[in-house]
Amino acid sequence: MEYFGFIILSIVILLVMVLIHEAGHYTAAKILGFTVNEFSVGFGPKIFQKRRRNGELFSLRMLPLGGYCAFLGEDEETEAEKAEKSGNNVSADSAVADDGTQSKDNDLLSYVMKAKIDEEKKERAAAKPVESEPVRLDKDGNPAKTFNEHAPWKRIIVLLGGVLFNFLSAFIFSLIFIWAVGYAVPCIDTVYSAPDGTPYCNLRKGDVILAVDGKQISVLKSFSDLCADVADGRTVVLKVDRAGEVIEIPVTRQEITITDDDGKTSTYMGFGVVSHSEFVGNNAGTAFKYCVPYTFKLSWAILGSFGGLFTGKVAVTDMSGPVGSIKLMADVSLADARNILILLPLLASNLAIFNLLPFPALDGARIVFTTIEWIRKKPINRNVEAMINFVGIIVLLLFVLVIDILSFVL
Image (cartoon, rainbow, N blue to C red; front, side, top):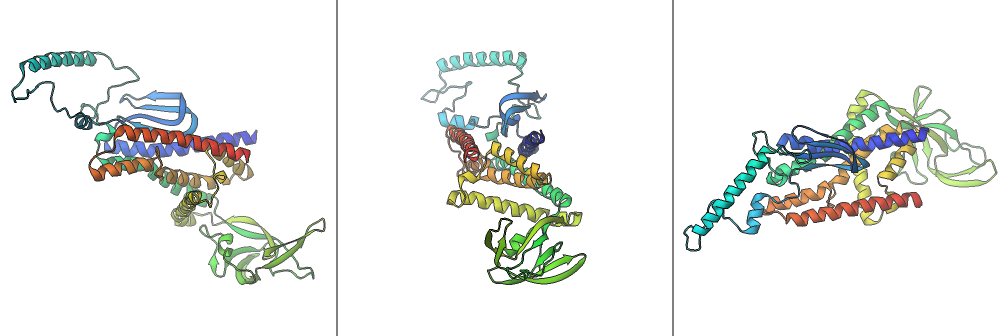
């Protein structure tokens, strides 16, 4: 029952991350005057929906696999693009013959067509807009601009809004985590002895390691990080808190031989101690000092993982989709509730970097398309772009489904 509770909590956390991301798009859009059609958390059938008076639809959908902020005319051509594409610059009010004079037949036809269009406009104006298709107007009462009618630099800012909000939330989550939990330092539980009975080092049970060769253990540098480059046979000086007294103890990385309860022996390279983690530094000063660099450290590690995926250093099976992530969050949270706070900045950074990837349907790819349009003063065919993004999201959903299945099977 407790595990089920952590599953529910993990789903809620995932939805909150999506909500923060889409809120970034929405906030940037509202500031820059974009028209939002729908703000959705999740995909699939709607569980809940609420339409505001201005026509914006807010919805919660069944599958917590993501979300979206849909804008008016997001994948449509602008009127100028349609006109340029058709090559028809003749208005309904005036038709011109080949000799430069106004054709009477065309003038009569345009008069009839204009009357029909005016009549249809009056009928639409008199009719009450249906709930699913509200009339969208700007603040001045004019027809609202579509997404692609806005300047490219504005669209890029809106597309970056989700990533920006994820990074900002990661800073806040890092601040909360460090303030509430702090960072881990090793506390010695056991000191092994050599076969002749001599301890492998002068550490004692209860010693807390604070630094390695003068380098302080901190939020950014763990004990493992500081010892990662210590070669076999090398001696380092550990700063240790022993019952309130800070002392320095030299230890040597060497071959350690241990014997288990069954009399079996094994060897490994190390300092000959067993320790557990104690958390220190959980105060406001440490939190404000390290929250930003800690977030960048997480982001760099995530970026390295994505890079490793493309170079083959990271296996696809090491990744997880939404379902696998929910299970992982539940598992680590069940082991230690403090892990929830560790996961929050990690997930926020992960979502930000993932959406920056130039893969179709992600924000990164849409930014690329918009940047190309900005440079060449002409967009790539909107239908082609829409099809690429549609195929991209299908491939993306299939990919996360496959890696979720693999994570459970392998």
